Length: 304
Image (cartoon, rainbow, N blue to C red; front, side, top):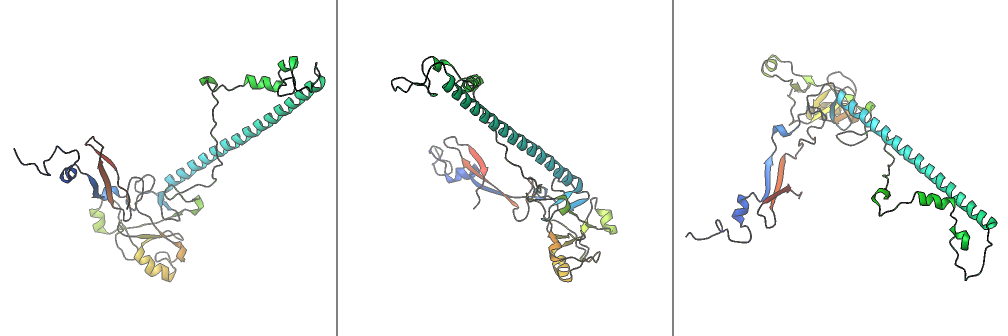
């Protein structure tokens, strides 16, 4: 019989270090590939190569059709919520008016019974009076308010008569938001951007997809470069050229249109619900062992 040691000792009530490693216990790391990162020339909504690209002031790029459809759907949703909120306020006002009307009718009925009742009001404490101050035959008569209460009585022990708590509709916001950054966004704040396409003969013969270059240094634009778009004219440059020329000369190198420092918008790349971006290019997954089951349960790794 072989000697037992940590690598084949299976009669313990807990897992050994070597057994945990074989089961994949701990934090597993894997670097994200190219397919997991959204290209810079893809729409943030449809994740396809953009058509007539528009950019917001935070640098998120969308197709013109996609962002217009998104903003219009947000406006329709806001109108629907506003209509529901207005209807709820009107219903609450009607209920308050009805409650005041019933209360006034109850007071008038009580006053009428007190002054025109068949039996006089007794002040003797030996008589048991009801809540309206009547006793004897008068106490049998119910007021209109009590009849309404009995007719609409909510019996909590009956499923069919259980009162329901109505959902409160809060006042909706009246501004549309960017689907990528969740900041306020209006159609007039969007500006179109123009990428310079590489029209060289060797690029046309080798590449099937469009290739874009920086109009200043002629470097091919990729996800590894930081890009800057000018909100004044829409031309896109690499960040190195933008900081070196546009930030100093205050003029676009393509169309010679004046620009200010606030017109330099850094374009965001990646960063959708299905992709990673920036420095977060490593996927982590923590695997721990179930209590007494011997099975590994997977959950996201905790941030340190």
